[in-house]
Image 1: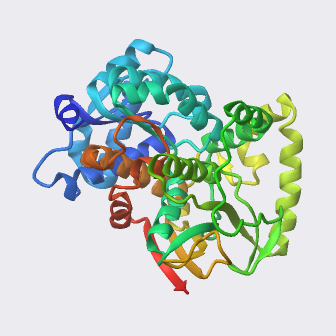
Image 2 (image 1 turned 90 degrees about the vertical axis):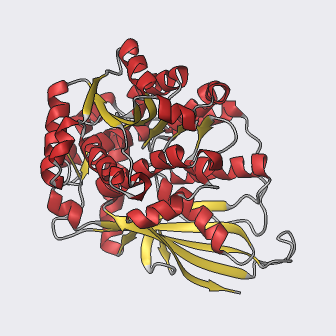
Image 3 (image 1 turned 120 degrees about the vertical axis):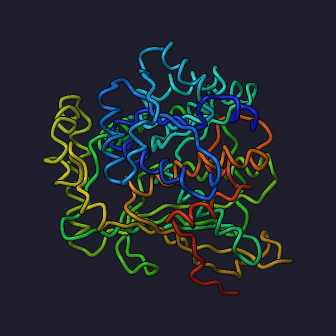
Length: 430
């Protein structure tokens, strides 16, 4: 793999660099190029997309924002999801492709396929479980045969949750058997905002729930064994004493990604599987009432195609300002942050987890800057850097992996800590 990285013109190609998220990934790659991984050497990278003009504009924008005029001369590759030949040409030139073109359910598969066929490793930031799991089903064997690593969900969905569980497991004095994660998001006076691309993924994800169940039934996977005390599932809305707020199940891809990681670690490395439940803290009772009304309306309107079209056409109106075609302002991003607090339990060393009640508790936290367009590019770029810099610590063969499965033996958590996404132990009790 190291020889592949050195023999190709570019170690990293940012595909979809002119998109809303892609522009921030470009900035983050530029930071990584100046980081300790590349002191005394040059990171060879390029941007790719459909429009040369838009890509030139993004490089100029990044150059001005970062005070790095040299960014204007970064190489540009013209490539389009609908043009197989252009995708193949891009992938032949890259060691790692960072794919920022979503929703992935519509635009992801051609890039995965082109990467595998042309020997480029692939990283995405998808939070779409059906896309992620179908890529594993369709391409895992092919990727393994060609020595290509395809690693999905390397953004806010789902590196903080997936690696947060591994960090908790590695920090406990004993055997971790169950974890609950609570997401909290803080924002400034203007409130949070996300780009319409994320909104579209949410809409399509909700309408996909029935087909997702059928898809998983077809996989006919054996249930993972429950080690230790079974984790109780909470209600649709509940008051959490742990975070002292009302909370709801987190509807993103985190729980499904963590479960896939735990399956891989159990089946391939014989590690104890950890039960996981993901929740989001929503605040006081007034927030719960607003959320219930909004949720009921959203579920009702997504049942009809005209309703889905309306939601997509007017994201700001129907999301009460949380999503917009423009995305968040620089001020909104600067004032926003996230944390996931993990409450884990397990058994001290020498105690059989199948006997008696858990006797060890641990609380850890993963925290960072604005989730969608600051933390996500950091996570994505550091995932790409890990593939480039730590090939010996990746799984023995290529394949389609979750972040936790791909990076459990690497120093990715250290890299994230240095880049602004922090993993900390809050408390531990026996």
